[in-house]
Image (cartoon, rainbow, N blue to C red; front, side, top):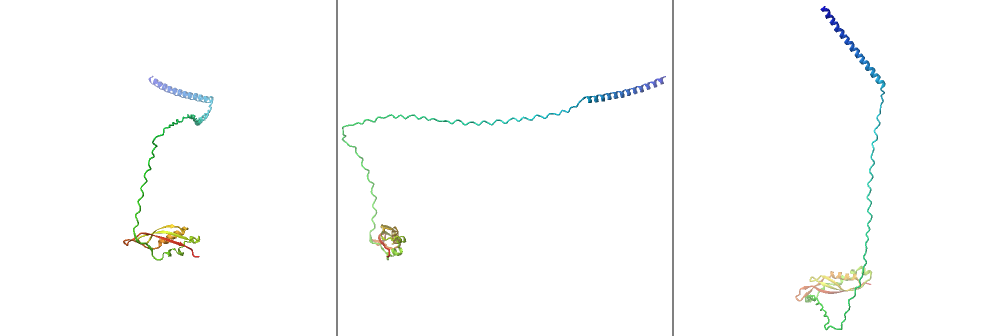
Length: 224
């Protein structure tokens, strides 16, 4: 009896386990089928609509700012100069007073300033005991070969007088034309020839050579 109970209890446990497995399988099948049908039905009923997003609106570019208004040049200023009228008021001339009384004294005139003193007189030339004289023929310096070409072309003739300064060495140190020949070329030739001449210097009272002057007269004449 006890063994039978024990065997019956084991069969019961197996039966319960089998029933539980069957219930699990049925439940899983039921759940899976319902889920699949539900999902399929939902897919059929659901209409999928592809919605394309509209492109974003173009970005608005703000308009450029208006150019600054150039300042208008200020209106020209006009300066009005109002000249005041010149009013000339006549000024009466002073009255002239006359008198019959003649003054005893006339106005004195200041004396003229004194004249400047005269320059001192040049020292007197040393006393000459012997005058200067030319050495040799002085006429050779004023011959035809010394006639100026310009004077020949102009056919100029004349007499030139000069005052020569003779140094203590007998050389001519100065020539001054005292009377022109009437032609400047002949006057220049007179002094030019005189400077080429040599003189015996003048002597003072002690016999020493001193500077002196010598008068020279040259007649220029063309050969015809």
